[in-house]
Image (cartoon, rainbow, N blue to C red; front, side):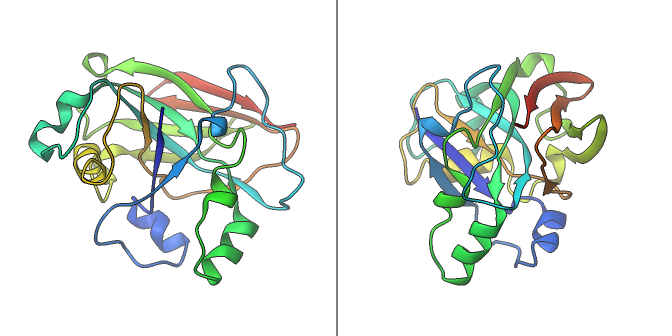
Length: 203
């Protein structure tokens, strides 16, 4: 299983990060060990002093594909869920200044909890899915798939130029504006619409 993560896919988030809007999807890979085991807490890593949440829609690939045309990309997934891309921002900022890869700050063990998935047929149109993240009962991030710079189908088509997509691969599709710090003791909950799909305690 591959975990593919797209960065900088919402304009307001790009602005909050002080970066340029990308002309093509920006993505990186995470190992399977990035997935937080179900019902397990997220333990604040000892190597960072500034870990932040990034809630994202997550797509699960359901068939083998390579060089997928965008107009056919919808055939390659039938479930969408939510995930949190925990980011060691202090480490990432240092890596970015040096022009180095991000994985150390984003792909560490347990950094990518993934919630339940919903069948597409039970969701709004794929370009109008609303989702949000609550931190201790307060909404801290809210997004709509229609605000993506690159749509889910565009992402699948683009990534498949470089990597064969296989059944069970998952794609994190980018985070909206509002990323923020986590603290030990926090309770995070992620939703599509009003349906809670993921709950993570920070310890």
